[in-house]
Amino acid sequence: MQLLAANPKFEQRYNSYVSPMVYAESPVQWHDALAVFTKLSNDVLDYAEQQFDNPLSNVSS
Image (cartoon, rainbow, N blue to C red; front, side):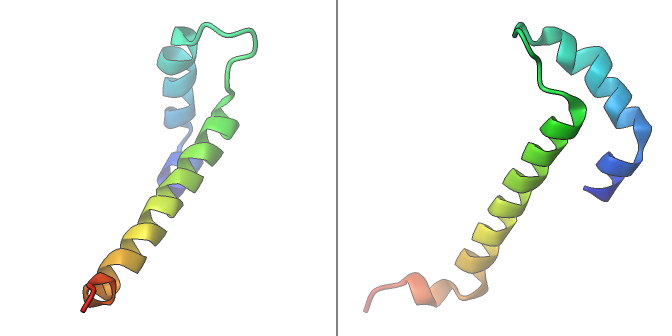
C-alpha cells in the first residue's frame, strides 16, 4: 500500500487509463480511489486474520 501511495507512476497510470473509462459527472479522483482500496484491503486482511488465526474457534461441537 505504501508503494501505491508513494510512487507517482501509479497515480499517473490511474489518471491515464482508469479515470478516462469512467463516465460520471464527477469521476473518482486518485486519492479517493486509493483510500477506498486501502480500506477494503485492510478489511479483507482483518477478516482473514480473524478467520484463520484460530480456525477451530469457528467449528461447532
